[in-house]
Length: 249
Ligand code: ARG
Ligand code: ZN
Ligand code: CA
Image (cartoon, rainbow, N blue to C red; front, top):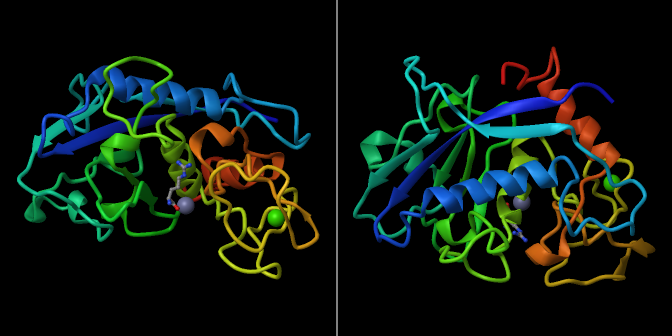
């Protein structure tokens, strides 16, 4: 319980091909998905798990840039680079990327081709300011449910990669804790699991209980995911509330 927290977002598009230079409409579709998923307003929300909750967190494209000027909250830069990997080069001007906007005031999202079959990656709270934020490949940023002609790749075409990465950005671990049954995600209302689930493995049992494959922090397909829990809410909001490591957002 508490107030709605709204996080200003800047989206940095770093593209080589015109396809990778995704449209404003595709970008907005991703912001819309975040606002649905973090408020549990997603139309695919189901009642399988009673601990599913509204995170009371919202997102808006920034309207003022770091110099105090009006902005769309979107930056675009062309590049000759075909893939960026996960070493944060996309965040570095000297490596051809785009520098973060003040990470204490904005959630920075870079959209660039990561390569290697990687959908996205995030920095947990407490890391270096210059690399703080989330990175997604363009074909996984936005939702095919919200427009046509978007550059998206099924079954990761519903915007859940960004929901998942923002979960990490707000301190959530993978639901299986990245280890076996003895390894936790530090959230008490998510069942212990011994590994990730892919596809849509509903009913899969590990560690003696049914896995929560519908959780955004598993590796299920986008259409299979539909929830964060009350325990995840407490963990994310703790980083954003006064005294939290991301309180300045
Ligand atoms: N593999 C990525 C990560 O661990 C993202 C997984 C996103 N899953 C999805 N269904 N979109 O951060
Ligand atoms: Zn992850
Ligand atoms: Ca747990």
